[in-house]
Length: 410
Image (cartoon, rainbow, N blue to C red; front, side, top):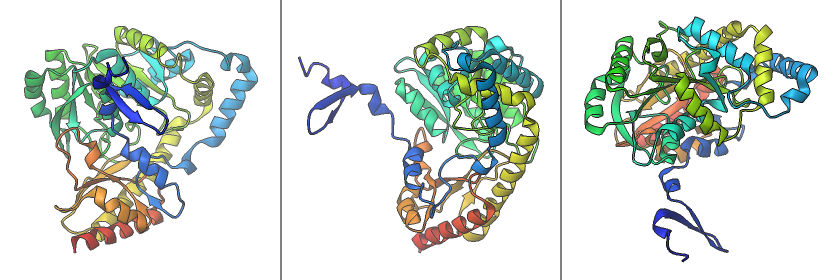
């Protein structure tokens, strides 16, 4: 009896007993980012590893007052169970902003509050995917999205990407060949590359989605953080068929610790996602939702975003300039117009994973690029975050990293 299901389980032995975990757990790799963050908490290490907003820019006073007002005016209700869909005033604020700032035709009934946009990815995967279903992604891809889809035993159809985002000209042939169930994309300031999908490719992708009736999961956590260049219409604003599932979050603008994200989608999709969320966590933190809504009633959110863009834009340019001066001339890198990351292609023969331990000895950290690839991983790429380091730290950290890279070339 004890061995009947061994072939479909992951066996993990401890000194006391053997645990039979679900087989699907073997498909989920450990997050390279989260593991590196454990090492980089030491203050002497200059870390370009995590996608961390700058803590000195958190609107602490405004959020503190928002929380205080909630407890003062409706403490008992805020501490009670709530609806799965989320706090209605917050959903109304989000729907209004999406309609007026992003031209997305939506309403509060089409918004589901999630525990960060990461939960949004998980709920979409849970609702749409069965074992063996395929998800079309660009290569490389957001690492935690690959983890979320893998948890539901999905397979990946990877298409290339370049400095203008996903190579959409490859998508139609891939759909005809592989018949994916979903298309996943970070169109604005891609993670890990920092690139932005061009307007022409956005229109082409929407047309392909319509013709083949394949939903697009548009993950847009960074869209408010544009530092230069022309703002692009989000895919959801170009969609007339209800095929774009739009995800976003307050994690990069108000606070990642509050864990408030949202999904905007067709009512029929939202209804199914609500059922999936009920089975997951019942509802997102009610106190945090009410506090966010109360804060946004009086807080100058647009002025706050402008300040973030000013500071992060300077840090982005500082890193780009420092790489140009300190890295080997064979190095290539992206030049983001927003977001939190840039993507570095090291000279052939180098491995980001092999460089990392040496870099940590020099008190600088990054994320190796290979884990971000859904197919054909390339070792000579690294991801760098610029938002969480001040310019002088960026300059020093890139100088240290440049010395490490040049030493390995020699």
